Length: 168
Image (tube, rainbow, N blue to C red; front, side, top):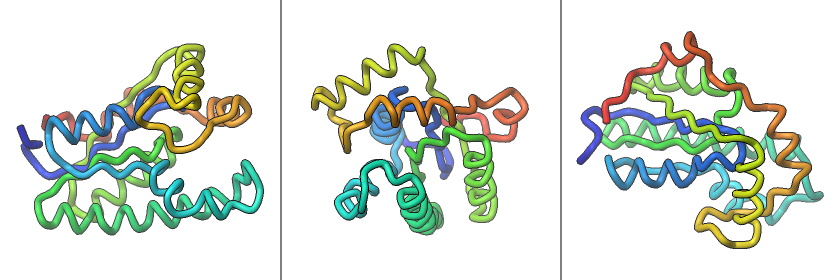
C-alpha cells in the first residue's frame, strides 16, 4: 500500500531506539526511499576519519550528506516518490530545519518518534556492536552513546503539531 501522498517521513529518536529498522519497515510497507545517515557516513567517510570520535570532522561530513540527501529527496518528490529520512533528528533545531526544507520543496512532512528507556537502548546498541543486528554500520561506544544521550530532545506537543498527520 503506497503512501497516499508524496511526503518526507522524519524518523526521530535517541541512539538505539530502532530508527533504521523503523525506516526500513515504513518504506517496505508504504513505499519510498530510505536515506540512512549511518549508511552514508559509513560508506563515504568513516574510513577516512583522521582520529576516532572526531565530532567536528564528522558533523561537517554529515552536513554535506544531508545537503545531498535533501537534493535527491526533492528530486524524488517531484517524480512522486516519498523519502523516509533516518537522520537521527535528535534535536528540535534539526527537525525544524528539515521541516523548512520540506516546505521549500513543497513536500508534506511527517514525524515518526521512537523512544525507549536508555538501558534497553544501550542493550540494543551492544547487540548491534556484536553484529547481532542487520542495522550495524559502525561500533557505538558507551562514550558515544552517553554523548548522544545528552543531545536527545523529545518533541513536545507544539513541535509535533507543526508536522503533518500521518498519510499512511
